[in-house]
Each structure stands twice: as structure tokens, then as C-alpha cells.
Amino acid sequence: MSDYNFLMESRLSPQQFQLINHLSRIAGSQGLNLYLVGGAVRDLTHGQQVIHDLDFAVEGNPQKVLRHLQSPPKGSEPAPARIAQLRHQPRVNAAEITFANGVRAEVAAARSEVYSKTGRPPDIMPADIFEDLRRRDFSVNAMAVSLHPNSRGLLLDPTNGAADIERREFRALHSRSFQEDPSRIYRLLRLGMRLDFKAEERTGMWLNAALESRAYERLDPDQQGRELRAILQEDNPGRVLKELSERKLLAGLDSKLASLRLPYDHFARIRNVAQMLPGADAFLVNFHCLTAKLGGTQRNRLATKIIHDRKTAQMALGMDAAARKLARVLGSSRAALPSQTYTLLSEQPQALLMFLLAYYRQGKIQARVKNFLFKYPIVRAKMPRTELLTLGLEAGLKFEKIFHQLFLAQLDGKIKSHQQLLKEFRALAGIKEPVPPAAAAPGTRPKAKTKPGKTK
Image 1 (cartoon, rainbow, N blue to C red):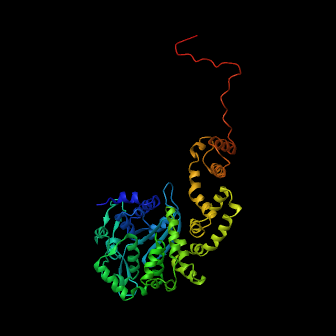
Image 2: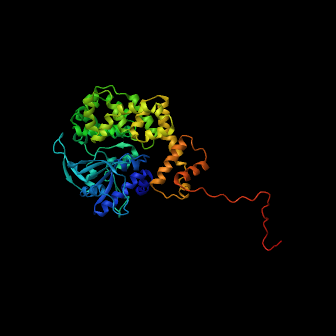
Image 3: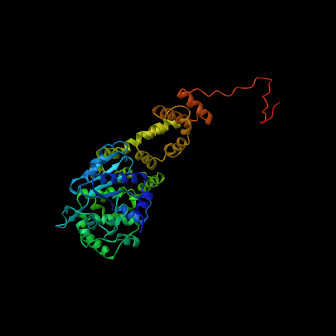
């Protein structure tokens, strides 16, 4: 059996692992049982090297965790990155969270769902973790890892999803699965392409029946937006959208998209850019690519439907204009010096830099953006920060200001040697140059050294 404590520590990003530890401490202090569930457990079990999102289930009220998560840390208590977006889902007592460091997570109450009638939302009731797992879509997503201090790392797998992961199969948990929640149609196709999994025989039959009955036409706008968002967060969204288009399923997500000729070559270009930048989030650039051929009204509608956060939606809708403005400056003499390029691009969001690399093919723009992303960080990392700190100026705002000034000078070639760097630092910091050893007087010989025990 896999050691999930080891898998979490070794496969999750440092930021994700820090969040897990932080939430575990919060839940423990509130007397709540917390579990890592769903896709993250599936991908850890499967051996995926990149875990996209973290989903947590709480036996009890997750608001106790969320309130503590939003409050400032006390004393020396460690805390994860600042929350950039938080979207509450009151009906299911959950919240979708995006942190400033890029980590995405959902914290939800463990629940059961009972569908009284096909096409209507289910009745929601609090439940224990085993009921919560059994109401999920596929066995491979119905696994949990305990984060309670007394059982941390324990795998809960009531539907034997680990065996289906070994077989690379999706197995729906009951025959009405796709009829009750048609978004599962899109999830199976999307995840199947990412993981190279197939539907097992009975699940394939249930899927085909749902397709024949056009169950996908019953998705509500919130479900449509959630699935479109998930597609645009995939590593290869163009491939997923092409598959859905060929199956005539795009209309189930949005009728306007179904009539578009999607620019799959642009999606491929964006993917190539994202692969150059480990940990990069291409979501907003993919959104622009998906909606670029739509009119302003339709783009605004889809931004509201897919993105939710107003500020982020405005950034996505204004990306084309912002890129044109930035490209003009970047291609001009105002960015001729490396320090000018660095200062200009330091103020820009990463999504806008990805947009430039994907859509602006001019050599000067490409070179300057790539230098900023790849070359200049190496120059900064090689600067002798520790040695400079030993020269007499304490770490702090003044030190960082001088350090940055020297970094920009080094980019522009104004500092060419290590000794020159030290000299410039002392001058800016107001530190006197060390006094060299006194030189011998002209015409005199240095005294000969005598061996111990001998005299002249």
C-alpha cells in the first residue's frame, strides 16, 4: 500500500503541502475531521507528477475552517499565501479558493446527495466521509486520505477506486450517474484524455445512453461554467475542445461556442509557452483564445459565466488591449536597456507575458520577454547576497534597495567584476573601504622570519 504521507510531501508543490499542513492544524484545533479527497488522491495514487487542485472534505461545518483561514496568523503560527479569490457555494456549504501563489483548493462539508427527480438538483444533507465518497461520480474520484493527526495518511477507498486506477478505467458508481448529473459526461471525456483512461464496459453503456437521450442539454449555467473553466485549466484544452466539437457536445456547454471555428493552433501555441514556464497558469490566455472571435456582449457573458471574479474577468477581457500597449513600449527605445526591460515587465502579470510570447512573434519582443523570464533571474540569483550582508549593512529595506540597484547596473554591464560590485556596494551603503596592509619603505628588506628556538 502507498505511503500517502510520503506521496503528499514528495509530489505536491511546497505551497500545496504547506496548505495541507495549515488546514490540518486548523481542523484539529476546531475538533473537525479533515480529508484530502477526489482528484488529488487519484493523481497521487496514479503517480502523476503535477497535482492540479486540492479538494478537502470536512466532517462538520467547513465555515469554522474558512473563518480561521481568512483571519491573520497569530504569533509565530505559519500561514499559506494570501487568498486572492474566495467564492462561496452556500447550497453545498463549500468554498472555492485561489491563493496568490497559484494554489487552487476547495473546502466543502462532507455530504450526501439524493436525486428525487432527474433534471433537478439533488437534496443535500450533511454526512460522514464514507457517504460523501459514495455519492461521487467515479470510483477513482471516490477516495480520501485522512489528515487527522491520529490517522494522517490513512487511505479510505470504499468503492475500490485504486484497483480501477491500476486498470486505467472509469467506473461510475450507479446506472443513473450521467442522467442525474450530466456534467459527468464532460468530466469523463476530459479526464480520460488527460489520464489516458477509458470507461469500463457498463459505464460506457450508461454514457452512451445519456448521450443518446441528450442529457447534456440539461446542464444549468453554473455547471456549464464549471466545466468550461476546468477545460481551460487543462494542460491541453485545445485537444479537449476539439473532441467535444467533433462529438457535437460543445452546445451543451454554450450554444455560441458550438457555432465557432475554434483556433486550435493558437491553443497549441499557448500550451508550448506554458510548458516553458513550470507552474505557469495559462487559464486567462486560454479564455482569451476561446472567446476572441465573439462580440463584446458574448465575451462579457462568458467571462461572468466562467471566471466569476470581477477583477480577474476584467483582466481577461482587457488582455488584448493591454498586450498591444505593452508591446509598443517593449519594442521601442524605452526598453532598450536590460534594466528598462526588467523594470517594465516586473510590473506586469504573468498571464500578460504569456500572451506576448504566444501572440507577438517579433524577435525583439520575444527576446526581451524571454530574457526577463529566464536570463535575468539567473543573474540575480548569482549575486553574492550573503557576502554583501557581511560587509556591515543589516538586512532590511535599505539593503534590498541597494541590492536591486546593483542588480540593474549589472544587467546593463556597468558592473563587470566581483571587486567592482563590492566597491559599488560599499559606496552606496556608506561603508569605508578596508585599509590595505602597510607597504614596506622603499629600499628596505622585510625582516626574515626566524624559526622557533633560534636566535640571531
